[in-house]
Image (cartoon, rainbow, N blue to C red; front, side):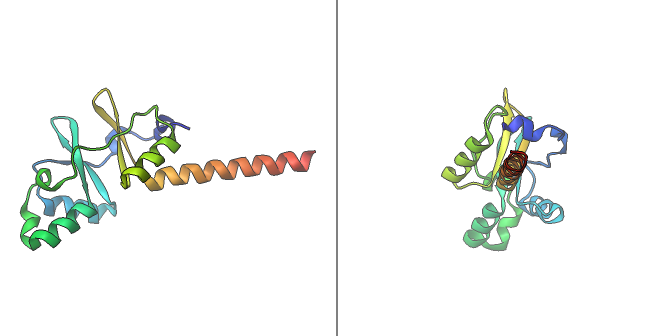
Amino acid sequence: MDIARLLSGRASSDVITCDVDMSMREALSILAQRRIGALPVMQGGAVAGIFSERDVIYCLEAEGEASLSKKVGEVMTAPPITVDPSAKVDEALELMTRRRIRHLPVVKDGAMCGFVSIGDLVKTQVDSLAQEAEAMRSYIQSA
């Protein structure tokens, strides 16, 4: 399965983002309220980076509470590692594992068209394996 199929039925406008000029405190509030782990950071309509829980932890450890006033653009992980919608789910999982990341903006022709987490991809793989197992059970029972 490819990423585009995984994203079908999701509107790209449903992706929650933040702007490079937003304060870390504001972005952190979005993460907490939405119960999510990361936000794509936008600048001029393009993905400039990723702001995640890890960025918050690193910043707080290094600079303390004063860092919460910094702009997201100063603390985000950049440049973002992205994936094309035509990429296969297992390719995206391999990329995430190799780069030790948990979120990927899906970008086509420079525009973000989705955002996937490692949880989204693992769920897709597990669902696929369950379908294969059910098909095998059905085949064996009908033989």
